[in-house]
Amino acid sequence: MELEKVTKADKRRYDDACGAALGMEYVGERWALLLMRELLLGPRRFGELRAGLPGISANVLTQRLSGLEAAGIVHRHRLPPPANVQVYELTRWGYESEPVVLALAKWALRSPTHDPSLPFSAVSLMLSLKMLLLPERAGGWQARVAFRFGEDAYVATLADGALHVRRGAGDVEATLSGAPSAFLPVVYGGRPLAMVEAITVEGNRAIAERFTTLFRLPPKVE
Amino acid sequence: MELEKVTKADKRRYDDACGAALGMEYVGERWALLLMRELLLGPRRFGELRAGLPGISANVLTQRLSGLEAAGIVHRHRLPPPANVQVYELTRWGYESEPVVLALAKWALRSPTHDPSLPFSAVSLMLSLKMLLLPERAGGWQARVAFRFGEDAYVATLADGALHVRRGAGDVEATLSGAPSAFLPVVYGGRPLAMVEAITVEGNRAIAERFTTLFRLPPKVE
DNA sequence: CTGTATCCGTGTTGATACTG
DNA sequence: CAGTATCAACACGGATACAG
Picture 1 (cartoon, rainbow over the protein chains, first blue to last red):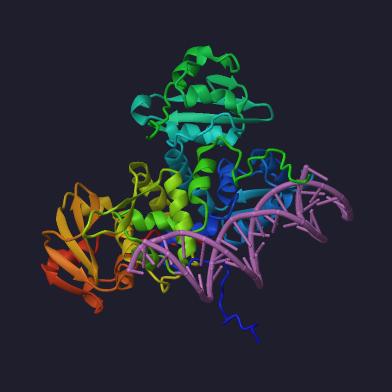
Picture 2: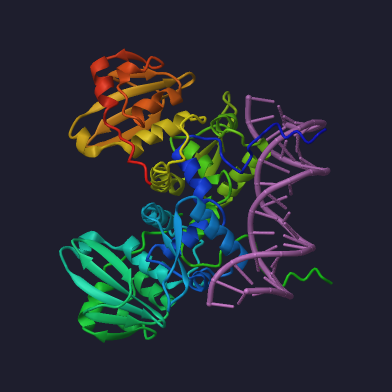
């Protein structure tokens, strides 16, 4: 009798033609946008994603990956043997969400409630560099700097006032090592690299130090 | 006995120092970002917000407004008598979320699943203009065009390759009237203004027609 | 008209345990 | 390591009813 749900396709949609509404249907679910963040610098395995997302449970991670895959944002593929593992990667469209993630983060970081003592993933740090780069201060300088966080490593390439970051190793002028959170005082706080003992530098120290002065967190509000 | 929740401040937080995580704590709740969208062009009353948010219920709207107010994003104030009504407005920081909303919408609109037949608010349309403006096509042209949607009206000012929009009336060169959705074929689809009968034009028709050619939806993916 | 308060069905979340 | 199964708690949406 009362079972007639009026044929309402109430699948948690916003009935709104606005792109912002559509976007929130895609990335508004809990964990979805952070999952995309972890994938922005290249493919990752299930366990790596779990490690970068403090507190997510395995079943929710599975659900989100399925949902993002169905939406055309994530694409899963199995590496050929011997490395017979599955990896998740953003689709081309998924990679184009980078400006969304960076704009959100840049806006939110101005909140006075930001707590830098919380866990901080390597991906978050590397994306922070793209987010906080001061192009005018970078000028026409070119540099290649590597970052090492235990297992994974990244190469940041500065050219034409823009920063490119990719996972992996490469030919660089300097290499910085340390926990991602050790870089927060330098990148967010403008602290000189030389004053942070938790970061070790190999290669050209002058280049490393200059590189780390190119970033500035916008001022807090209120 | 079982009441010991282990002192866990599990208020639906992500334990993550990344700005994207903080941002999702603020705007990731259902309706929150769309509510901010409705406020981006100036203060609004409760009923106006309800009208622009298809399907939100009064209690949820109240909750979101309280939450955003507590977060420092929205600020409520009561207009002095005789207009003794309460209005909601973004704080200065709240207004700075505009790039976030526009970036999300621009990204999401490339999805092949976008359905332009859904309800479409006046604010969404006016923000679409800011979002889809082609600066190179606008060049150095200057123009002031008004939009009228029954009760509320907006003025769009083009100058220096950027578009400024504010609610209200003003001295303009042309005025376009019609339902917000009537503009979708023109703004999203590139259809000539003259071919859309649901839009009426007052003032300088040539300026109105040229103005409506300055926008282009980025191509769909897949 | 502008909200607030309460109730309740339902879906989603997340902890734990479990399987390949 | 990569996921699935189960289940309790809770947040959400919708329907009221009600107050200024």
